[in-house]
Length: 117
Image (cartoon, rainbow, N blue to C red; front, side):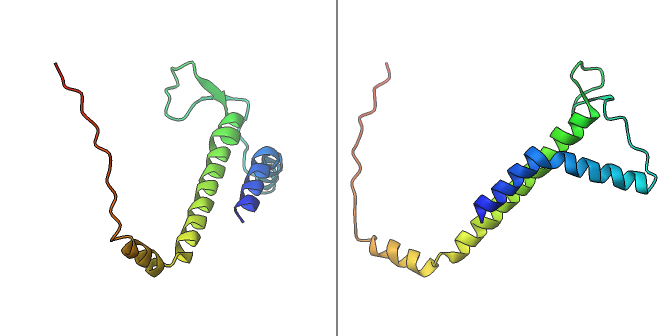
């Protein structure tokens, strides 16, 4: 399942932008919504307009926003998978294992601390 989700996210990142962007443009045209000029420059998130670090609106939506959303989806998928793994664990079995190890004692080697002058 994880491989399938990762593959879909990678495909969406690599090949999905053009299709999604076209779908959004078609929607905007159908609803008579004005599209912004995607070649127009804008500051990066958290930066001042006075900085020289400007990017195009297309870069902002394609890279900063779209890829951030994909990363969030990826993290969400991993969290879901981790929860499924932990649900599959048997806490009683883990408890019994640790209780059986209670009688085992292990000595750690003592290291001499260097004396400070």
